[in-house]
Length: 137
Figure 1: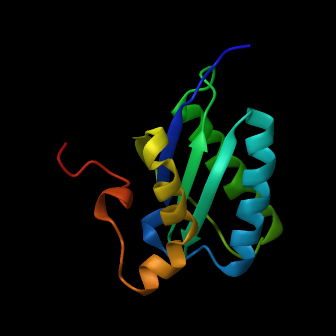
Figure 2: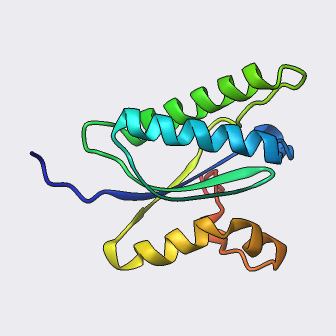
């Protein structure tokens, strides 16, 4: 068995940052996340969201690329939301942000992701943890 410790903080947004992650859509998203996580062999450490973006702290096995992991979760969740709630069109924005996490920082980043609503309500966000696109590029 292969030994690996690969931790990531992944952030992605709804299309045009529209407030599409309603309570109903969140419930569907987290159900898909749990199922897809098991299917892909992910270790989901924490997840959190607000109405226009998602944070995921995850360990991805080395046989799966980050891009494929995100593609599977985004695709399956958008499909499930659109199937369940046919009166609206749910889309994720193209791309995502990803940061690697060391073992010592894992608990801190997990807490940040899991408490997204509180951080945003109190305007206590950490800019580097919120980026989904390269503004330097």
